[in-house]
Image (cartoon, rainbow, N blue to C red; front, side, top):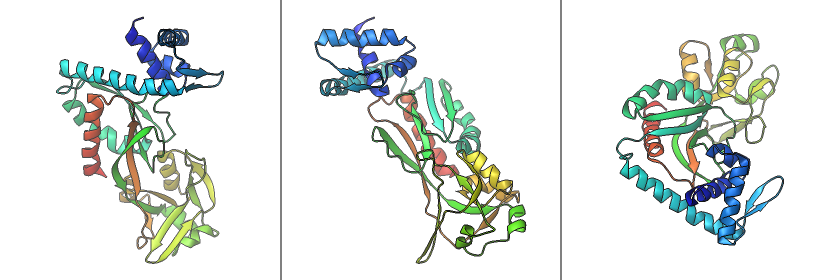
Length: 300
């Protein structure tokens, strides 16, 4: 192993917070990664990492060294990109993670155009609403609805998703059409619960009409942590739901969902693209970000 390997191993361990996760992203054994970092510490005669059985923490000296090495490796990647003409024709694998409705309704239908523009980029897509360990799982970027509070990520706002409240015609025939949002907290009404991945709690529905504000918590008989399953439960008549219009729109057109409380306003949900702040932003990620901006402006 050369000096480059030792530096790369150290950077990945710091970013992942784990020798095991770093080894997975580098396609090396955990033992090899550990040996590389120990070799680096021996050469520098400085302890870079505190190791315990449960976690790895960077020392103050290691944090300062990491900042410089991460920039150095990023500059080296930039040089490689320029020499290979990567800025003109980006290539390589791009790992992303996106919510399932966004993948199904927005991203997948538009991907042929992206592939035609950048045929040498290979996209590996995780589809989920879960909290992804972007650094530890070596994901290039994630797209998520709602605020992103992880300090190690750069969050780029790409859209504001308009929300609406909906119910299936079968549900309304069985339970009646509510005239006021507060009725959703009373029998016989119930909601479809959306489980927030950050806390596992049910997201309330907040509405405003002039100076009047209502927060609906509601009772539920089914809750889901996936956007597609959440909307499907509403279409099946399992309760009232609050969803982005791009998700509910196709079902409204088919008559499978009916909009409610159209004179009330709901605060839009921000949609973010996020990536690690200390990791080199490759040419393929830069063009993907620009493409997502274009796609969001046209489709959301």
